Length: 115
Length: 108
Image 1 (spheres, rainbow over the protein chains, first blue to last red):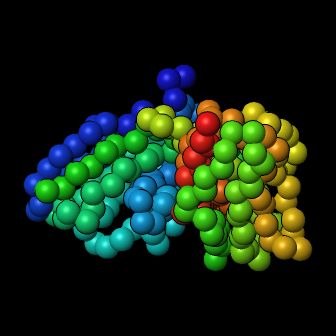
Image 2: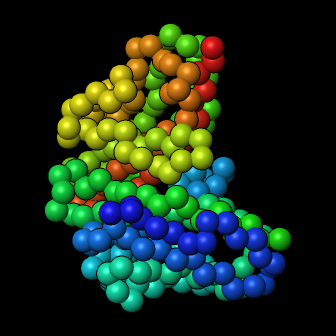
């Protein structure tokens, strides 16, 4: 398996534009996580899914953020409209609850810059 | 709700010196604790987990339920250990929450 795949790797966009980040989890994994990494706050859990169903979205900053998982192999994180303070690295990760210790595997991240 | 605290954002030691990265947690249930590492320009990867009681790259971490801590230790730091280290806690809901991270720099 190629691991968790995220796209785009880098995006620069203007304030007010819509941003869509994409994620393909590892095949067979039943949990998918979206994290945001910043210097100030470290790694924040935004939302996570189990079997394509959102379980906890309390980490989503505000209504401008939304996430979907239409099937087991694809998820999106959308920011509309984007703001400069949204600039961060966004990580997608997946795991399989059946494994001992519930190890999660990360994608390489999407580096977002909003100007 | 669970919380993970890493009190040090930055930690700098000399090569060969012992290193300890602190992690404290709060959780009412039975937690699973992990350390993840992010080397420069690489994705986050699992370093070790408390249930395995393993030593990886010379690092160990012991879960102390009395002190609610899971500090990461290595007796002799190496330059290649320089990285960002995150302590993480998984709850009964199978989520995974991370501390703010500690950037370790090992100087020659």
